[in-house]
Picture 1 (tube, rainbow, N blue to C red):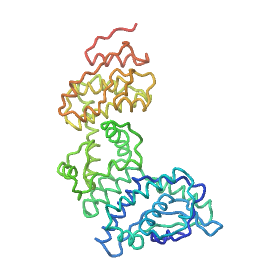
Picture 2 (tube, rainbow, N blue to C red):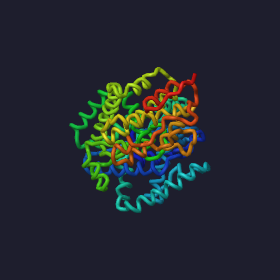
Picture 3 (cartoon, rainbow, N blue to C red):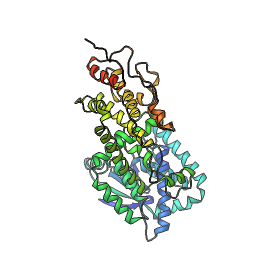
Picture 4 (tube, helix red, strand yellow):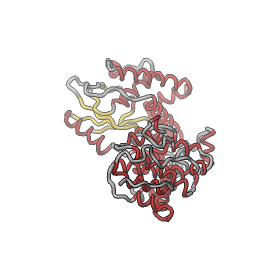
Length: 425
């Protein structure tokens, strides 16, 4: 049975946190997002009136033998809402507050999040009454209550593996469409263009290119692009008065991977822009005769993970360079290629962790022929010839690959850089 209830109605249910639940892990960032969402909902309710509601999720409950309702899904949100309610109304009591939270992680997060709520309202004191009212009149949840534990877990599994496990790119799509609510025509156009694209291409764009480049350019090791990372691509509100936001607004529709953009329609324009740009740079390599050696190496039929990582590292470096300078100078491209592929020559075993370290500068690893933070260099460069003029070594010491199977690759890199090839026979 599913019911829609206000947050106050939810918190007045006799709720219990069963032992199988994981610790409370919501961070200050999660609380900040929650407060921001509620604040936006209050503004929207004032604007649209007519019974405007803001739904903040689905809660799955199972009634236990003590006439309490076990929280199967939604514990993180419920505890966070209890903390917020307790701050707004200090006399508030509910069954969740009767729990003894013995887990150290839970205790730490409850303390940190409650302190942040106090700090947030110190700067937004005038909104207290609006938040109290919102708990009753604006904010709501869908509550699904089942009779059997097995049904609860089956529903939880379907919610989290099929129904709710949205791709981070789908979450970003929903977020930016919401930012366009005042522009219905543009919203419809953005959806149409998005649906025309292959979602696999969009996923690869973020997973393999945009997110790693963003991290590496800031001197940060990359990590999988998941729903937890979408803040990087939420952009800046169109109404923001920040100086950097006004600068970004004037820059549109010119994008930079390492720079912010305006939330809403510009997100969809950005995705389309980089899908085309990535295709363009790959076509340029395939088309131009001066890149025959590079093209030949890229077309080597080798399915090893290390070789795939190396190819992708080159394309990331080239996309980062071209994105900034819109320049395809032969020497710069060859320098980027040599830098990227020398790690394949340097290491016998090559995994993504090694690529990650190499991309941010090698961290003092003497095994690397070129210990250069290439993405940071591109990010900080003022002119393209700062990249084409870099000293990139194409000869190792000792003058042989770490694994003999890469002898041919090593020789091609040396030939491309005008170096003498010594026969190994």
